[in-house]
Image (cartoon, rainbow, N blue to C red; front, side, top):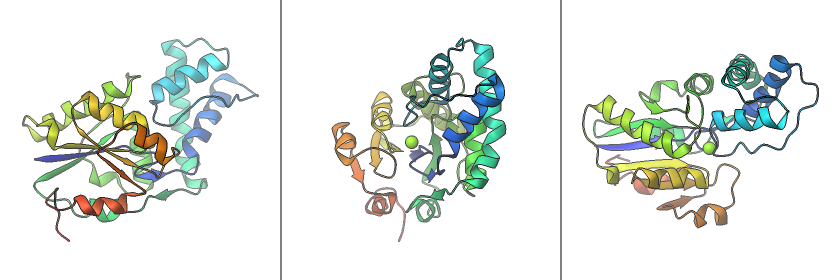
Length: 225
Ligand SMILES: [Mg+2]
């Protein structure tokens, strides 16, 4: 059995900034802030880590209660933000997902919390393709999300997996790094916010301009033309 674990933002979709917009709207709604400071990195990071940094940057205590408040407000704003922003499903994703078969399992490995991931995938019509995944609920480090995704894949498939048959697909150096944390192969795609040089420096097994180039791996995955 082979397993593909997909990142969401910058890999499956681009949301036109809806995620960041929702988080900033949530800061205003949950804490009455009028000035949003825009110095937190989102790319390749977990929602929990982003929320932690946003709280501190706005002189709010990074308590579990404040994190829960901000996350709830973020999730409340997300559907409308997705509906009003110009996003897209990235090239090569739909055609690859359409080639699922018995020998391959397709899941998620994302810094999103599960509820946020579900909202995004539903909006873009991708939700039905992913039966399991590792999400960032209660986890800050992406390497831990990768371990969770691997465990969820084994649980969903009810079998032990060889990490050499697992591919992690993402748009950031952090995606490549977390693949290594579980001994998996790494595919980096240049459809996010990182330069080819930055991605190459992380040492992925494959570096593609976009996921249409993953067609060269279809024979490896047992996918037919
Ligand atoms: Mg990403």
